[in-house]
Image 1 (cartoon, rainbow, N blue to C red):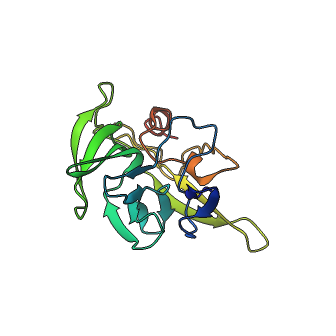
Image 2 (cartoon, one colour):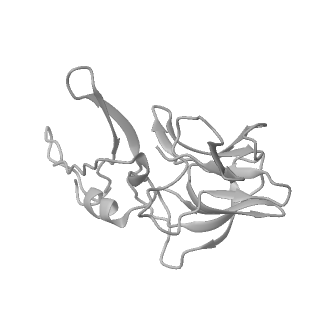
Length: 193
């Protein structure tokens, strides 16, 4: 679990004791899930987590003492590379049905204004959207996953059959199981997997 810490006068301390991941693994260079505005407010975007209600992205605002915490709920996006601006926050936002975009969020609003979308990204008419799943793994252990159903309106499977399944397993951390648009996933789901 990665947590944001404050370095001050040689002291290192956690700003929050929340059980959420606030960063990517050290081998994910260039990732910046936090920003500090001109008055010292720290904005941090924990790794979006899957819940039975769906996926959520929140931004935590707090002072440098870890007090005065306030959550801002945002649209279903995976956020990274946060920066502060006059309007609020700017972030690279990724959704499950469109490529990454630079998006400006006015805090207090649940949506953002897309400033620019990657040129190679476009919204798809038919896209398999991620669904949170949990299943037993033995001895009371639960395994969590993300399921993508096959999507292709031009194809009807034979009656009484089930599509083949592909499983991508990883050892973690949670942040490595993103749910932003993945062409590799859509390639298979559009072909009946």
